[in-house]
Length: 422
Image 1 (cartoon, helix red, strand yellow):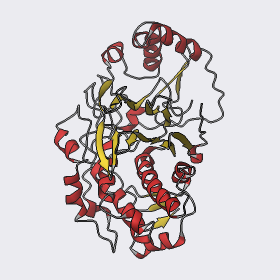
Image 2: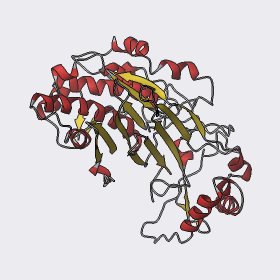
Image 3: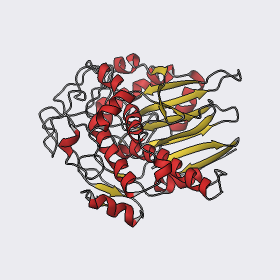
Image 4: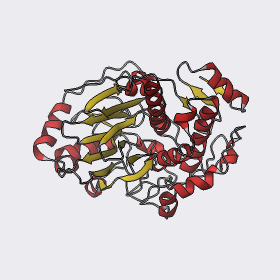
């Protein structure tokens, strides 16, 4: 309840299998990300100090079930106009907010064909910008150029994986919401093999580099808490959905009449004239300008992967702010490594593949700060290999895989999640 809900937004990737045996599935990306109110402006938070919050308050949401029942019976229009909308607007404005009825009425979710790429013999479907789906494909394109299965999880390949993250985070600073500015060309280029080839020339095996080497252009604020669910049904329909109200309990404003906790997604916009602690200027993509369609960037990347023959392979996504797309990236690589190792040991039954790929320790370097965070015990030789190459080393994903007609689900214990089957 504290990370997501109908007071927030998110992204969804949906696979609809074809009824014809030889036809391809249809995969769609749904964008229901929050957008800035029409009255938002670039300096609305300048000089506005944050308010301290008090812990220990008891929260009771008596009316949320009634709100959900109304929406279920009357459809989405019941949320955007009528008593529910009236109550939300009244509460926001009573707290000093600028949301209006026109903002709710003009909001439209976006539905389009999913962003598609390939990784080796797999087809990867993910979400478009303003998510980090294009960045995920870029990092996979970089790692595709290495023989990870043949070479295994070596210190060198671990270094390459971290370097791909650093190039990915640098590339992320250059993209915008496609509805804002003229960023279509950059966004279209980012997930291509050609772009990865140009970047690959700068990936060095013997050493890492300071952040400026990777050519980040702007400071991009990172989003925060999320919830993710990966689902596969008996017919092969798959859904990967990530939703959020941003920080814990969102804006910490609860509308008592509807029981809805309201998001604080405006926190994901930049404040103009305020460089970050590393001197990068705020991104021109993310100031809260008076553009109702402008959505802040997101670290989410709900993803669905198919085998070469079009059958379903993996449905995954994650929660955890800026760690989301690097975690998805590593789970895909981990699954490749673990499957190869199981095959070599004569245990190619897939039973442990997904859970091992999710639970194994992960490395995270988001360029700023230039530190490799290790969240769980990791091989000493692998970490020492990073240190030898100049890395500074310090010490959540949901997935469902398909193999041999069986489903194997894993929920990341880092987020106290569970895997449920039917």
